[in-house]
Structures are given as C-alpha cells and as structure tokens.
Amino acid sequence: MSSFNRLNNLVGWVVFAIAAVVFLLTLEPTAPFWDCGEFTACAYKLLVPHPPGAPTFLILGRLISLFSFGDPTRVPVLVNALSALSSAFTVLFLFWIITRMGRKLLVARSEFETETPEPTSYQTLLILGAGIVGALSFAFSDSFWFNAEESEVYAMSSLCTAAVVWIMMKWEEHARDADSDKWLILIAYVIGLSIGVHLLNLLALPALAFIYYYRRSKNPNLVGGLVTLAVSLVIVGSVLVGIIPGLPTLAGASRYSLSIPSACPSIRV
Image 1 (cartoon, rainbow, N blue to C red):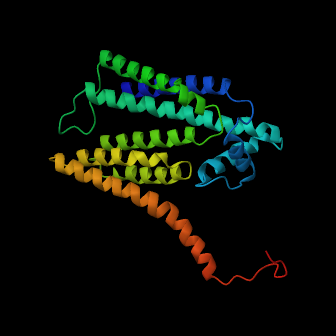
Image 2: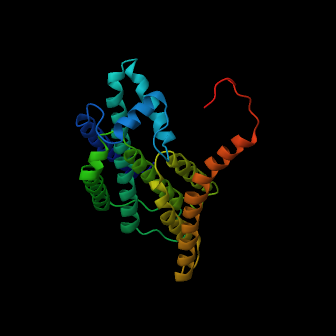
Image 3: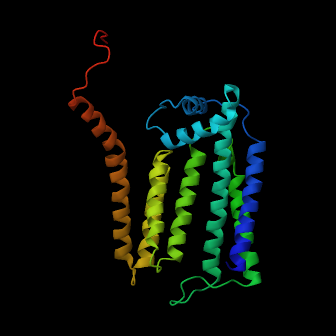
C-alpha cells in the first residue's frame, strides 16, 4: 500500500471518529416525534411499518435493539444510535470519494497506467484538506445532522448512496483488471439492500451509468451520453414501477391461487 493510501485511510477514520463522537453525544435520548417512534417499535418487535416498508433498516434495528438486554426503555436510544453510526460511515465514504476525485483531478494518469500515480506532498495536503473540509461540512450541515440523531431511514439511505458511489469509483480505478466486475456485482447487491431502506438510492443509477459509459467507451460523444441517460432512466423506472410493486403484487396474487386450509375454520371474518 502506498504512503498516500495509508494516510488517506488514517485521516478518513479520524474524520469518521469525529463525526461518530459528535453524533452519539448529541443523540436523541428517546423516540422523537413523527415516524421515529413507529420505526423504533417496528424494529424492536419486527412489525410492518407504513408502505413501502424498510426491511433492511428494521432487521438492523432489531439486531442493535438486542443490546437493550430486555429493557425496552433503552431501545429508542439504541435505534437512534444506528442512525448516528450510519451517518458517521456516510461521512467516511464521502471523505474517500472527495479524496479520490481530488487525486484524479490533480494527478494525471496516462493511458497505459492502471492506477493514478502517487501525488506529491503538496498535492497530498490539498487532497486530504479538501476531503476533511468537504466531509465535515456535510456532517454538520443542518439536515444531515438532524437525521443522524433519530431513528429514521434517511441516515442509512445516505450511507447506501455514498457506499455505492465509492464502490463505483473503485471499479473505475480498476476497470481494466480481469476481476473488475466484482465491484459491479457488489454495487447491485448494495442497491438491492438499499431498496429495503429507502428508494432514494435509485437516484444514483444515472450517475453510475455515466461513469460506466465514459470509462468503457473509447470514443464517448453526445449521442452516446443521451442513450446512456435514457437507458438509465428506463432502468430506474422499471425498478420503481415494475420490480418494487410488481413482485409483492405477484406474491399476493399467488396466495389466492393456492388452496390453503384454514387453521380455524369456525372463525369467520
């Protein structure tokens, strides 16, 4: 591992620690108003919240609620802490996204190089400084900090979006490697999990499509960019309109096609 990568990882985890400590110290001590109480109760008992649901968030919330050790009064702050940790990891990934983009802007890579060359000491200072300022400015912005304190899905949704963008940039760096498609498979997996948190992550698909097109195309042009945009929008629309509501509808329709004897035939609704 190069000296820049080691320093980049170290500073990134320091930024994560700063964000995590601040978020945990300013955490909501109980269930806030609006949907937070619903999500907390549903996570604790693995119930069904309002549509479209958030199974990934609820399962993780159930896991962290086990640390209450049978005391239900501790559950709200534990589920709130899940959002705080998710937000801290979002800040970490944002730092790495900024430093990766800054490195690509400052350090030119030739056509025959597989990785971006090592930056100089001055360039390293600029890149890491930009990452620190950008990540911490986002961490302590009003809306993001507010969502980091409560048991809502937006903090974890932000984490999924940041993780997907960072993984896509990892793929772009190693697109010529024989096993580079593993990053694309990981992206599909994270997006699938993120649908169980919030649908906001689907908005990253057009950006990911453009990264793929301009990395793989030898002669990118306006027509190709428009086609990429159109295809990405079709994919987003098919997931939103087809897969997400379609699969549960199909499962519900199959229920009526099966002859299942009632466990209590004497009970009528």
